Amino acid sequence: MKNNFLRFVLFLFTVTAFAQSNKVSVVSNEEGMKLVVNGKDFMINGMNWDYIPIGTNTVNANFWKKSDDVIKAALDTEMSLLKNMNVNVIRQYTGIPSKWIKYIYENYGIYTMLNHSFGRYGLTLDGVWTPVTIYSEPRTQEFLIAEMEQLVKDYKDTPGLLLYLLGNENNYGLFWAGAETEDFPDSDEEKKFIGEKRGRPMYKLMNEAAKKMKAMDTSHPVAICNGDVLFIDIVAEECKDVDIYGVNSYRGSSFTDMFEVVKQKLNKPIMFTEFGADAFNEIEKKKINFLKHIIW
Image 1: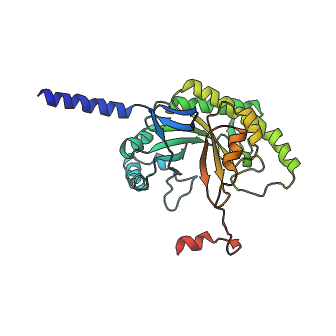
Image 2: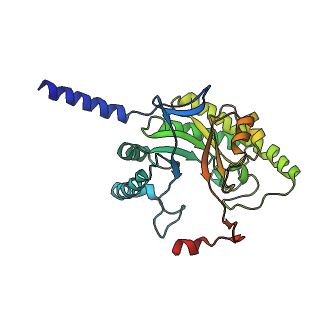
Image 3: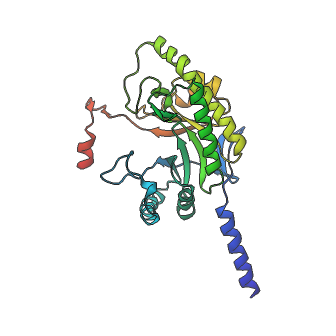
């Protein structure tokens, strides 16, 4: 009876410990910088993940509004595949109920990097859709800071939450409206103008958000997602309270001088939020037909 009681107490302790929110921090010492989760070094083996059933898109999928049975069946299928791939982190946009972050973590050991677009694709202010986010505008600043504070309130105690991620290459979005990627201006002067006029207020606001979020939640770091190293000098000046520099990088077969530039300019840990080669076949010198490759 005594042994059974001890086993029961140990089981309860284990379950309780696993259900608690995680302590995540960025540690910097003579060996360099690393992510530490619950006292153990942690290497992110992650991927961007979303669930969009056939016949729907990112706008109308409404996956998290489905019944619990539908969501659970989808997660069990997807997360078991990711676990077999040794994925330990998924990047998800806000909107996922906290109970499913917990479910994914407790059943598959996969953490969630919670991503808020931070006005990347426009905002609805006072009931009016604004396609281009003006980060220097007081209404926009108030709105985004309030959203970040609410985000922390809603998720900070969620088991399986790894960190908060602000934006998705928002620096690229300063040059155009919407999600479509277009050519950058050729003029360095024009880039510099955009960086100062629109970029600096954005990075300053991101840093302000990071400070407020970290004051509310001391257990989870705050990262930003930048498009490569564009405007990194402004990031260095304005984002001193951001913990991790996330980048979407499509340089091809090598990151070239990425690590050296980030080390020299920021001295912050770098996290690849997206990476790969673009839709161009360097060997054949022509654009890749992705549809053909997917079908065949």
